[in-house]
Amino acid sequence: MVTLTFDVLRQQLRGDVIASDDEGYEQARAVYNAMIDKRPVVVTRPVNAGDVIAAVNFARESHLPIAIRGGGHSVPGFGTCDGGVVIDLSRMRGVRVNPEKKTARAEGGATWGDFNAATYPFGLATTGGIISTTGVSGLTLGGGIGYLARGFGLSLDNLLSADVVTADGKFLIASEKENEDLFWAIRGGGGNFGVLTSLEFRLHPVKDIYGGPMFFELKDIKAILDFYRDYIKDAPEEMGCFPAFQIAPPLPFIPEKRHGDTLALMVACWAGPLDKGEKALKPFHDVAPVVAEHVGPMPYPALNSAFDALYPPGLQHYWKANFVKELTDDAIVAHVEHGSKVPALTSTMHIYPINGAVHRVASDATAFGHRDANFATVIAGMWPDPTHNKANIKWVRDYYEATAPHSEEGGYINFAADDDQGRAPANFGVNYNRLVAAKRKYDPDNMFRFNQNIKP
Ligand SMILES: Cc1cc2nc3c(=O)[nH]c(=O)nc-3n(C[C@H](O)[C@H](O)[C@H](O)COP(=O)(O)OP(=O)(O)OC[C@H]3O[C@@H](n4cnc5c(N)ncnc54)[C@H](O)[C@@H]3O)c2cc1C
Image 1 (cartoon, rainbow, N blue to C red):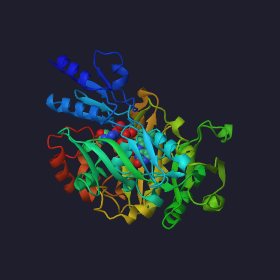
Image 2: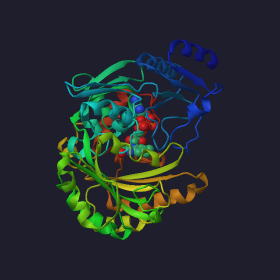
Image 3: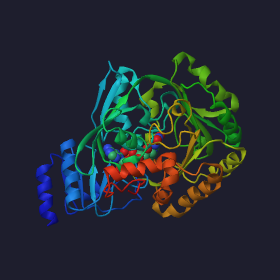
Image 4: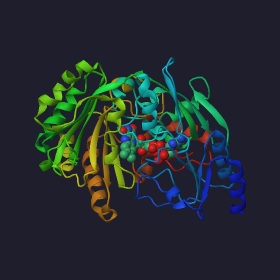
């Protein structure tokens, strides 16, 4: 019976329909995190909103849940599933810029690389993430923290409207003027409410930036963190930056004899006037001597893709996250202890600032529930060899246990792990109850359940 229904689905979709006995299934079921090994009933690759509607209707009529895949970066692997229908939007990656209105509309499967490549020639950008291979949709639905957030808010603060296919197969436009409750919910509620087939963003005048990575001796990390927590409170909003622990990769600008050493890292992005860039980065250079750096003027998309090669698809991933109001002395002690033990070249810990423009949006204006936090931390365990899973997961958990007492109860849903599912009320924060109401209205049967799930 299921085979017969696939035939109908194949007739309805202009895109691909890949069932378990089809060629390409093994590749189609895989996601970015190689630790995820799930077997969906079928993977669909729509090419337009009509295809998405057909796939959603098929799933609902077959009583199957849906996993939505945008850029595929979900660390818990929410872009695939066991026994459900995958809607993989990777064939829908177009981006159209309206330079006059300073807006851009991205299809639901676009990555930030697609987005930035389209907006850069117009000297425009909006807040995206730190690397370019992450999906625009998934990142925006949970928040969207990146270099430009202090100046322009979270990615979701720049969302003007979205086209959404809901669980009943309806196509809705969500904006401040239409389906306002859905528009509110998708700005922070993750992939719980439907499939976004396109997203329209406000753009800002950003073309070339001044910045890049600065490596310091590990012994200077305490001084760097002490400096950072004070500096970032009222640093100019053109400055996006974050400190990290990082094993030195074999890059040409790092002295060869330091490759493989654990170092302190600060990455900066000055999006103000270029001729003021050097001065803007001076406070970092004054904290401690730099071991190696690669800073200067560069296109914003170049910084946004500078770390892509470090994080190719196929690594093992296990991450944990916290929101932080104050970076206390005790928190810094815990960071120094655990960050210094970072076990893999690709593992790291970042402390992102989320003040500035992020704080100028009211806590209930969108579903993002942690506007009062000043920082979002991520302990990102990423390593190549699955036989090392136990030790790497332990590093993430120990680090998390040590820093959680100095943090808010919730963490950023886009960085959270699958075993954080029980923490939904804390992770969604002050807006959780209103999100539950929206879930009951738009997805009462929880068809969209492969996400940081809001139970209807
Ligand atoms: C290497 C790496 C770097 C990252 N850097 C950052 C960063 O700098 N800033 C930041 O904020 N986050 C960052 N993240 C986290 C990232 O925001 C989340 O992993 C996000 O969910 C990824 O979105 P995606 O579309 O790529 O993922 P997917 O796995 O495709 O989707 C993840 C979730 O979003 C939902 N979703 C995706 N597309 C749609 C759609 N079109 N309609 C409805 N629901 C959809 C899915 O249901 C799923 O729940 C990073 C993640 C990785 C792995």
